[in-house]
Image (cartoon, rainbow, N blue to C red):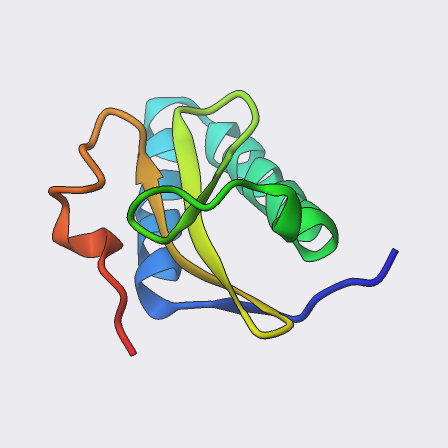
Length: 102
């Protein structure tokens, strides 16, 4: 299967680092487990991103296994662009961080 190029926007990277640090402070090694789960989902997206449904706000969402987080992304041509990694208790349509920045 063809892999798509991946672009991780700065906001997604910052959210990822913040969540990873939070988990490390909660329990040693948990941040590493979170990082591995995010990396696994990002790698998975490069192969199957088009299979995720486009939601009403124009984005696609992919869950992070075993953690209450989702990747917010879209396909831009042949590239997967990840805009945010957010905790599922947030309300993404009201959260300014899920808006597109171009």
